[in-house]
Image 1 (spheres, helix red, strand yellow):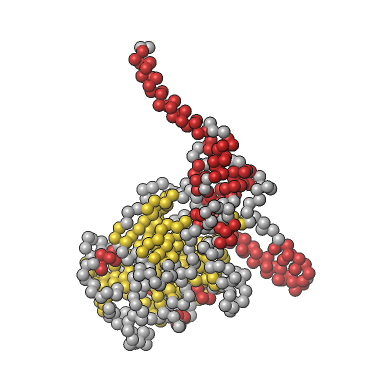
Image 2 (cartoon, one colour):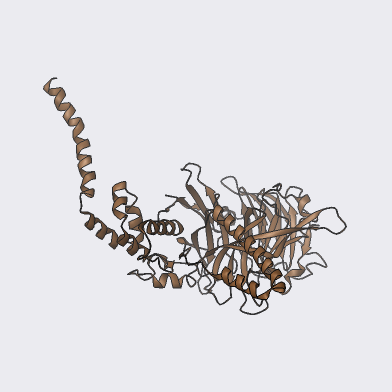
Length: 533
């Protein structure tokens, strides 16, 4: 072999040797020194460091190191490091890292202008107060008493259709059309198909068919008798246009009109024929003021637990998942993920069965913490910066927040508007929660069903043998000494203005573990890419 060839081979191997030397340099540190460095890292840096390579991960598998890092996390009661094995500490860290999303990466995309602002700047709308709702390529606005449908698919919005809006005698009266100052997305809702328009007026709802043409006296109207003493402050089409979420002004009260489809039923989209039938506008599927939480006492008391700001998310088993705020019960307000069961009842004089939410069919699946509800977790944490990574958290006092569920049901985005009325422009914060996962939620439902059966069995034995029944209740209350990791969210950002739309979609050009969160306001559309580790 010539000397030139030998020299070329040596040059080819030289970069490889350098890389190996650099890679080995980090692992040649004394193990005690590596573990001391790990103990002084913050939790996110420690989680990132131990996932660099197998050598760094092995160095992190130390009881003292893991116990010091676990003490910085919101876990109650604190993990017993003197009795827990190394495997137990490792399991506790893995669960906490997943719940708190320590390895989740957030990347903000470039903002784009909304379609609503394009309509406002077009000159077609002259009234300074505009209520609008946008759906893909169509935008509907109300300019005084005239409704206008704009085609916003092109560079410039164009008027596709317009028609006058009039009050109906006996339902709305002869008063002014809008009872409160209109704001974006507060009085209108456009269906996902872009063919239906819902309009709120005082305590009535009107449905327009955008395909059939203008009708100055819309026949598809419904007065809400259950909305007494309140006015409608928002509308949203949901569940494939099969339900209409009606937000009321009283402490986050919500009505759901229509009949949602369960997981094992047909998911046909709602049409104008559906909304004019018994299953549509005239049927109230859910009234949040009637729901009773499991284990709640003194339902009529001022301190009883109640749900507000409810929003249905998707069908789940024999019911539907929903997110809401929980108030009262001598607890700080916080968010919850729950399931609501429904029951079918025959419609009067018709051969159809209507699905109605069972007021006693609520099962809490996950507790999602707010700033005050998590105070006991974050206050006891030995973090040199106080609450550290969790100082920016929701208040859970927004009457009507907005939610979006990830396609795999593992994460939930909450849009919560700031309640300070002194701000010239309202601010909205976006928070990302980790959910338990479908398997845990199913186990939770099965456990709840088992407890109900045991309760009924205990009550039946109480009549026959009170002493044995009381003993069985005492044994059932024992146990449950495991720790609990607080479900504390990540704060995505703070945006100017109220959120008019919130979506959580799977990224098309990314890996399978990536999602895109979209938040729309009257001015801009913002997106974030959420990538799982």
